[in-house]
Amino acid sequence: MTTRERGKMIYILNGAPGSGKDTQCRLIAKKYNLKVITVSELLKEHVKDSMNKGEDGHATDNGINLRSEDEKKDIEEIKNCINNGSLVSDDLVIKIVLKSLEKYMNSTEKYEGIVINGFPRTHKQGILFQKCNFKITHCINILVSKETLLKRIMNRIIDPITGINYNAKIIDVMEKKRQGILLNTEENLLLSQCDEYKNLSDEVIARLVRRVDDNANTFEKRFHLYMQNQQALAPLFHNVCKNVDGEKPILDIFQEICKIVEGSAVSAVAAETEEAVETEREGTPK
Image (cartoon, rainbow, N blue to C red; front, side):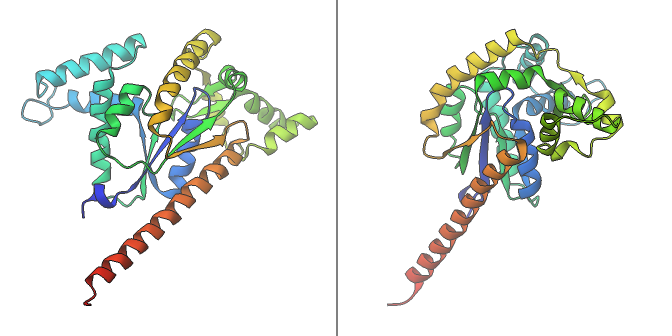
């Protein structure tokens, strides 16, 4: 039986900008030993890997000699999109994601499955992905209101080294507490819901910066595009779709997602057991 047939579990984690997909991907990947696939990171890795390979597939000193004309075109498209903020074509995204999925699905590394962060983004990506016959365990949607999303975006700051996002308001409250300033009831409640912030070092806090694209105008465009794509994508994954309440604190959302992941794992074991029993029954002489 091939790896694709018996399959490592594949989860899609979906949500609008500011819904907390990155955070939840990191949490469930750590708890359940999952490999995270993020399209933006794959595109950057693709450029880096290709620029380091020559015509014969070996590394070059200057990265100029690429292995094919198609690869050159792919690299130019990705670099242009990164520079001007536009979207990479659906066909190229699919090609790179599928290459990565094949690699990880057939890997001998000891992880239990894959979580895909925010993909597919468009209806065409969804259609092309379905044609490849990868079995999706669950598509988990983090549902957050537009108003909450905008508040999060406007309060979002990022660690430029790790790429992890943080809430500026929570960081401000943390610093007040560390300085010995008395917190009010609302501030104490806010900190009590954010255990993942407690161990942040002063060094990390000092280097946090606001993302240049986190503004109201950019959010409106991204949110509108997301909703358009969601309406087109929803019918493609309705049979494996699970929704979670993204308005809750991070750890509460995480617990909801854990129930989905653990439920699917139990179902998978039951299915394998049933299949094994059926196989044994068929092989028993009558």
